[in-house]
Image (cartoon, rainbow, N blue to C red; front, side, top):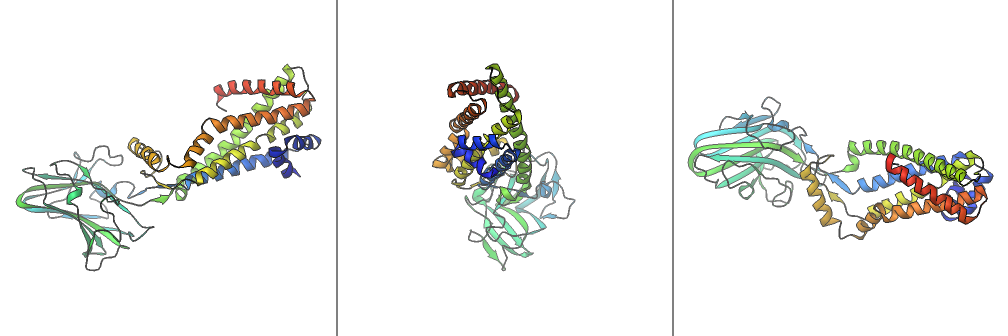
Length: 398
């Protein structure tokens, strides 16, 4: 059977190659291509299953980019769109929402008509991200800062103190991400419920700052988003990666097959030997790439032993800041794990070298059987072909 001969190449290559020489069949190579593609998908799935990414809602910064939308910003001052002062480095928008009051002890802004957003559990939203700036005519810090999360009506809400999370510097943007370090949205956190609100239905927010003495006050909000971690497997990006990977695997497989077989044939001719029928020769060489299946499955097994990571990014490619945070997370969570170092050896130098040696060894057997020459000469031909192929790969990348 074709399938039996394919797997025999791994543990009894001489026996397998003899059978293939007697009955050469391209079906075996096609089966190996299918197995390579399947094992690559398994490896990619194992990698993707370890990552959770953090998409944002809204994904276009709509809440702080315009006043002319379905959402409603109100304030005890006059909400306006600030086109000159916004969080620099914001990759989405170039505006902020601004309000100011005169001779007052507090300033508040609220946005309603959202969602409703489910923040009730593991599948709901876990974080609230925003940038906030306050301006006091004398530079005096707020004595109190609160955030309210409305639930279906403005009389029903969760409230929490944000005083420790905002900047103590006048006219300075600060990020107050509610992600669990100090305060997290959802049940079991430091929120005071007013009038029976529901975490399953959050429909608005209110930011409120207060001082002891009346003054001219300004508040600005930018880059306001709800966030939650979702498996990378569930994103459209993973589907795109798989499609691209399968196409790449097929192209690389055929290129490597043609390259190896072609260089081996030329080397055999250079050594003044005969390689037998070219169809049989190509079929035999195509079978050596069953080694790739072992490599991909070993990669998948090692990656499966690693813990999952919540990536500090909403999509790929990552920003420089997100990439640095990702590196720090790898250092903290994966470096102590044996599987991480095993995967590093597998994908780095050691196992790729072993894989190449394995391929060369299978080629030695193939040349020995096809050309009916000594083992020493077959090894010399295969090693020469390997060196030529390695040099050629430096130029074409395969």
